[in-house]
Length: 135
Image (cartoon, rainbow, N blue to C red; front, side):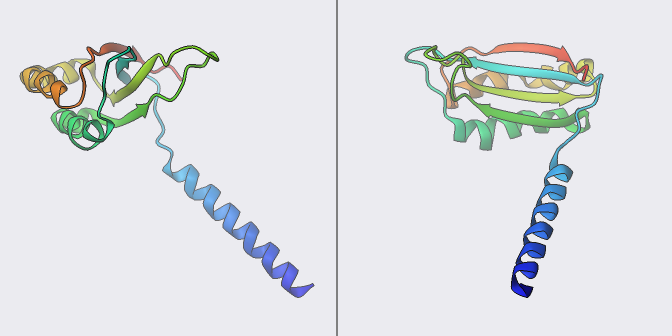
């Protein structure tokens, strides 16, 4: 009985500790932030090197953004939301920034280097979507 109580207490403590740490690691994306999504559509014969994108390309672009950057994310496409349909995107990179004009000013001088780096990880022309976070 005593052992059962100790094990139950340990499991509950472990659960609540893990849950509280998980909540602390979630970045809050605030209303009004600008989200720049760089989407790489799936197509037959197209390639994408996720390791390079994750370790070289995105950190390079993030460094150009400086203090305007709140966070960036990288998503690897797994499947379509509709069964038996092709994957819509191979990958999506997203930057959350405070100011779109500051984003453009930071990226502008480096746009040629950013575009030249595409050849190191993909043969896909990305689709770029700029939006405002509302919730």
